[in-house]
Image (cartoon, rainbow, N blue to C red; front, top):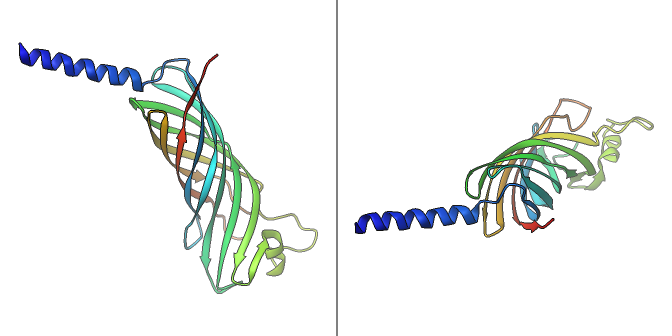
Length: 208
């Protein structure tokens, strides 16, 4: 009898934890978030690390499935160790990314996620030992862009983000890998954004 009482008590406690941790159907939250990413370009020799920040909104369609969308400002790029045009240089690219995600809660607070992420270029520079250049100026300097020619770096990007997140007491730890689908620029060999992103956020539930 005592063992049965213990088992029932444990089940009741676990049930209460699940109930508290799992958001209800129809719940809407907003989440400011900040973090770090490690990025490279598919033809670069080294990665770079920098900050990212933004906001995400999420709507629970059922108790275990939700859709979310947000805006993340992200610094991306990659490092090159080459003899031409400089011994070392870094592609420094800033994007405003818009992740649109489907989230499946496999356990209370633990979500697997995947989606699509359009991105819009905010800045494109080349950092070299001789200084920092706007990327179009850099290409003119090395003879890869002539006066009047269209810029070579695409203003739009598209990626497939996949990841996992865990929420505890409204605090959310999120890790994602963003696989770029579109060429970063239209010269030379095709190369693409590759970004691993870790963020920490806090969810605020909205009342309607």
